[in-house]
Length: 360
Ligand code: OKP
Ligand code: ZN
Image (tube, rainbow, N blue to C red; front, side, top):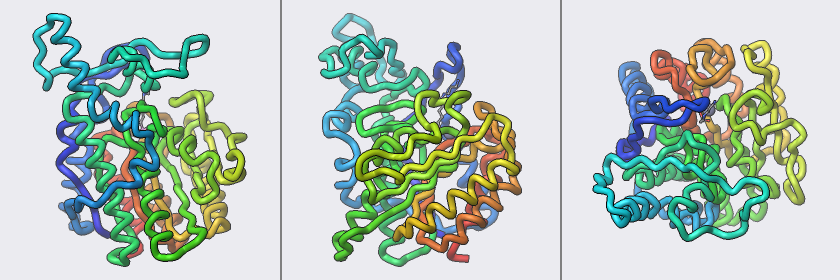
């Protein structure tokens, strides 16, 4: 298995987020990928690579140009605004948290000029602070995912892992939240379709399987009316868990994308007894779609030890999960999403990767 990592994630260093109404230390930190990398290195798992600077046309196909511009420039524009208001500002210490949102009965149809307004316009929550290095970090994570797909398409490996942060599956075409800015899994799937088309395929298709505890609302919305990408997600019932406002079973796609969106929500407290059959159903749906490739949005936050989630998978269950996905026998790009239990993160990820590895 080839594993792509980029050091750019270190610049995305936030101190605190709002969690259930209180300001708490960020769960999503550089420690997460460090722990996974050192665990994999100790067990000599996989071959680590730095990503090549591949063209990222797919990034511009997935996210709107105004949103890409926003993510790239917002931190410096926010700092300039504070300075203009007479505050002395050290940009490295400034963390942007939105505070006013265009909810129902407010104007959602135009982007405000104010930087404060813009942050609220593009945000979905208050858990996703933006720091000076956030743009480079999220771009580096997307580049790792694109490199994973490129290696698969070139036949260099049958399974590739993008070990990156911040995660991506909550990011929509023009929205950030849930610790996510760019949707790496979506860009990876789009890059793969582009490569297949450039080699002459007329109707290529890719499946995305999302096994993070949280529903991948961004990925769902990006592909909701398309039939070249099947999105299948197992997650906590949004009636009880973040992101609350998307991820129900009856969301099955729209227009050309009808029946190409499959949500398998599970109750809080679910363990392998519930997760296993849902994964089996997901495998059957993906097999019948017969895609040319699989992108897995992998979150280790389904583990019973996770501090912000509510499933009860054991470390051994992660190996079974990997093994079941391996049975599809599809070239597979695994993209890191969530997972916040620092004491088991390395081991659970290792067990999953060892289970799914087609190169072994
Ligand atoms: C990102 B990923 C619950 C607050 C939840 C955001 C969670 C983002 C999860 N009260 N805050 O899918 O792991
Ligand atoms: Zn998650």
